[in-house]
Image 1 (cartoon, helix red, strand yellow):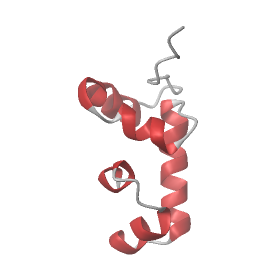
Image 2 (image 1 turned 180 degrees about the vertical axis):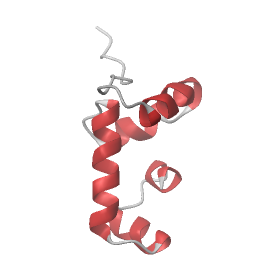
Image 3 (image 1 turned 120 degrees about the horizontal axis):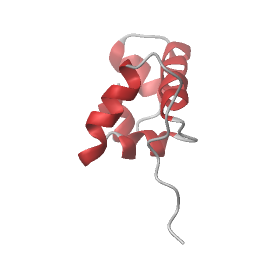
Length: 75
C-alpha cells in the first residue's frame, strides 16, 4: 500500500489493486498518518523515503504515542 501511496494513486485504485474496500484503505492511511503525526498523504510518502525509512518503520510498529517524523518548515 505504501508504494501505491508514494506513486500518488487514489484510495479507490489502491483498494482495487489489493482487493480491499476503499474504506479499509482510508482507515489504514489514517492510522499511518496519525502514528506519523502527518497532516496529509504527501508527508507520509516523504517520511517513507530515504534516511527516514527506519524511523518510519519504527513509528508504525511502535505502540507508544505517535511521534512526528515530519520536519518543521525552514525559516
